[in-house]
Image (cartoon, rainbow, N blue to C red):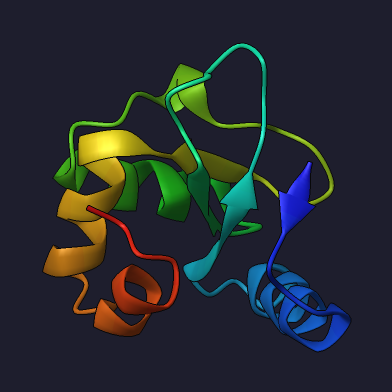
Length: 99
């Protein structure tokens, strides 16, 4: 379940994904499978080959892609922070107090 974003942010992310951009959306998150994770960053792109190529930079496996209307990786924990830093998305880190 997602918290801490509004419809405009979600819509912008969806549009970027469908336009073939590598798009980032960070939000608060609760999932009983990952009780230690309080935030998630969804990194999406409609072009699976482009998303796979991007994921290879960070050691992400193609099988981890959620293949739905908005194909994406879910990043949390240390990998989430590592990627946000390398992508210079410091506002995501600050806004959601990612440690």
